[in-house]
Image (cartoon, rainbow, N blue to C red; front, side, top):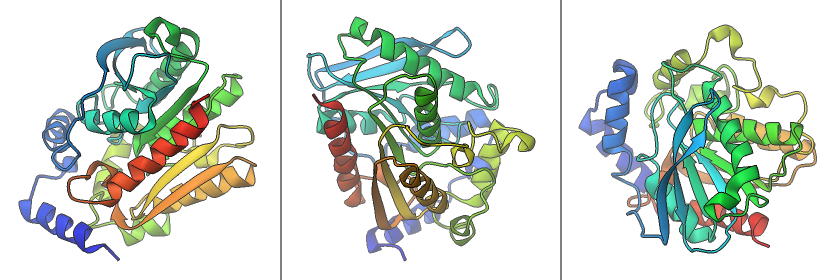
Length: 308
């Protein structure tokens, strides 16, 4: 099922015999992810503005964030939530991706360093996301940006947070132009056919998913829509969605199911399914040519929904 480039890359990764995240402590897994996260990513492109800043967190404490802007004008804003299973990842692991989105779209991107599990379990990451989104909607002008043209996006666990932010924006009457969902998790129990089919050997293994979930949330809370947005009662009226999925990804079935639910609720969905690729392919632009196409698809949705 894999493209030749993807199959060759997975073979090289497997031959490297790196210690799996689920065999590490959370802190060691974070260090390993930082070391490897951008090895296959496109080079960090220069931008007119790259600034470290702080945004309010859900606990009232400031959270680190980073602004990427391709120009100095009053640009629209995408709040970006990084992947990493709610346990690993941060501003450095997704720096290249955020730069690419800003450069290709012409929009500003603000990446949020939300609180991670197990030190901060569910719903800490959700609360941080909501607090940052509300702040940007009201105060982006302080940064010289246009909070009236606001989107949220993320990959993997960050895609989950973005879907939840879009539902919250609707429920609180906060105008939101787009939800950019890159290989998002939306289900509660990792129990779809794709989870079984791609449980081993396709980059994101079942053991890693189970480890991430256990670090982040109690089993009895997993039907909460803030963790599993596929179980939300009503999706009518949420922001337009751009959904980018990989065919050989354990999360692909729940991503497709969420796109179907959005469409059934009357929400516009631009769905891109990349055949023969695995989870996280969008961060493999040095080796996987389709990563650039996925970045362009995301940027096109940002341009159309956010530009005046």
